[in-house]
Amino acid sequence: MIKTIEIEGFKSLEKVRLELGGLNLFIGANASGKSNFFDALRVLQGIGYGFTVDEIFNGKPKGAGSEVWEGIRGGTARAHFVRRGHSDSADHMRLALQLKSPDRDLAYVAEIRTTSFPYFRFESLRDGDQDFGETSSDPGYISSWLEKLKTSRDIKEAVAALACLNALANVQSARRLCERGENFAALVKSIFRQEALRAAYLSWLRQLTPMELDDVTILEGALGEPIFALKEGDETLPAPILSDGTLRFAAITAVFFQPDMPGIITIEEIENGIHPSRLRLLVELLKSQTRGAGPQVFATTHSPVVVAWLDEEDYKTTFLCRRDAESGASIITPLSEIPHLIDLVRKQPIGELFTEGWLEGAF
Image (spheres, helix red, strand yellow):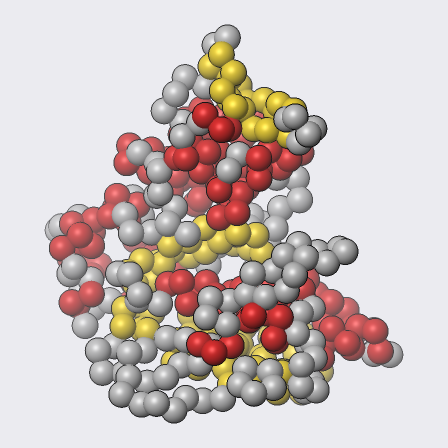
């Protein structure tokens, strides 16, 4: 779990530091910085995968043991923060985070140059009180901590490096699963191998799906591929004829009951295709599954209905994104730190404040 994250000099994120929780919700107008924050998470994921800086930002074709990696939006050419009215920019970005687990407290820092010859110009790693120092990589090379796994004679250093890289790589985007039913049919099939997971998945799906759902099944396509399908009475409804909203919700729900749970799940615009009457249940699903040892979730929403179903305790990790008019930098603020908000929402629903644009005008 990422406990804290600092991002400097990346796209519209001039300097951002956030204290994170199990469920982290990002709200705000279009082009306010939400997607850029998610891109920063993908940079970290690419580091964990062992990609070079050029591969992380500009893409990597499918290999013998890996899928296609789509580069970061804009590639290296648009990776740096540029202040409004200025043509120059810094030549590097900085990512710093604290990774916390039951047995480890890791601190990782990376400064990445993306101009001219992309490379990791600086990295550091600490595990609890033990500082493993600073490293740098040759231009075009992978994270130096990945190389240390092969060469280090210090077992503690190697174990810490492995734990850090695994945590960075252990991210799953719900977007690809939500595109079409066949993308998550295999996942649902794995859920159904464990009766407890199957029962829990069906229980949530029955509450959140507007149709009278009797069961879920996996069909076999013409080429032997698995195809997700719902059963309603005697009728079987395969993925190609289901609505995008139904497929999206089935995929989002499936993510939280998979046998091999990722450490981090990202979901963009969680309300897409889901009826407003079901959004409360969706919020409850996200909150219930991220408590305790559950995965950490990063999600975006434009829905005042979603915001309305949050508790005051959730405001600490619900972040308002906005752009500074002078510099163009994204400013990300927890709702709990917006002046007078807590007192105001006790008199007026926060969903109304969100719809009226009060949150953006509170500063």
